[in-house]
Image (cartoon, one colour):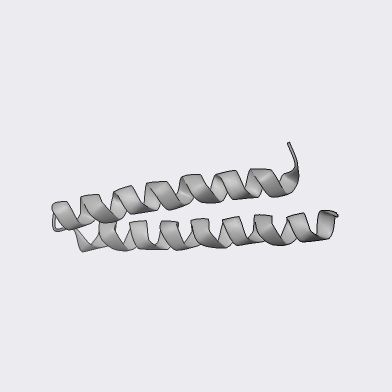
Length: 59
């Protein structure tokens, strides 16, 4: 599997995990969990974009 594809997959997994943590934090009224989820989701988006950029330069 190409390095760019791996980054995109990892990014998607982090985004999903972040969304789950955000919702769990909202449901349990836990601002720390919500913030952790937001950070993880943002990190996942960045990881996906890195995969996009790597794909451009792999050509």
